[in-house]
Image (cartoon, rainbow, N blue to C red; front, side, top):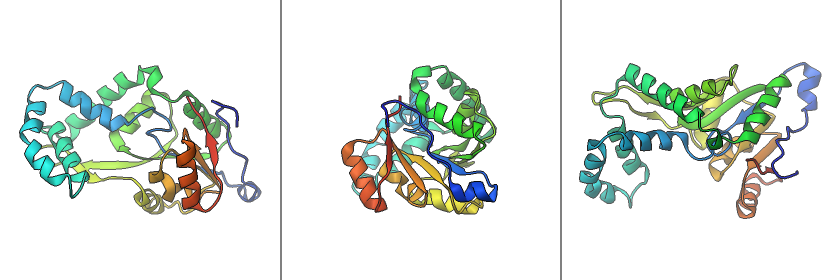
Length: 234
C-alpha cells in the first residue's frame, strides 16, 4: 500500500449479500490520534496545579515500592491524584474543555486515519471506536472533530469520595468482552497499532496494523497466525 494512503479494505462479500453493513473497528490512541489522549489530559491536570506534582512527589516512595509488582498500581495512584476533587459533572466539563482545546491541535491527529474512518462511514459501514481512552474524553474529542454517528466503547471512570476513579480499563481482551456485551460478536475490519490490539484484530476478516515497525508487524502476524495489512498513516 502506498505510504500515507488512507485506503479502505475490500468489501466483505457475505455481508453485502446479506444486506448487512460491515462492522469496522478503530482503536483511538495511535490510530486516530498521535499519542495517548488520556495521558495528555492527565499531564495537563498536573501542569495546571502546584500541589498535584507535590503530592505525587510525596507519594514517590509508595510508587517505587509498587513498581516491581505492577506498573498499573503506580499509574492508578497518579491518575487518582490528577482527578482528586473532581465529581462526575465537573469531570465531564473538564474533559469537554480539554477535548475542545486538543481538537484545535491539528497536528496531534492522524489525518489519514480520520479520512479512512469517514470513508467507511460514507460507504455505510457500522463504525465502532474501541479504545482504552476514557469514554467522556474520547467522545468529546470525536465530537469536536465533527465525527458523529459513531459507537464508542471505551474505558470507564466512577465517582468516589475523593473524586473520579478508574472503573474499567478497556484494553487487550477486554475490548473483545466489551464488544460482546455490546452485542457485537463478529466484525470484518479492525484497525490497531500495537500488540494490545491482537485480541481485537484476530477475529477480523481484515486486520490492519497502523504505523507498525517491521518487528512489530512480524510479532502481530505471529500472534494472529496470518498476514495482516500494514499502513503508514500521518
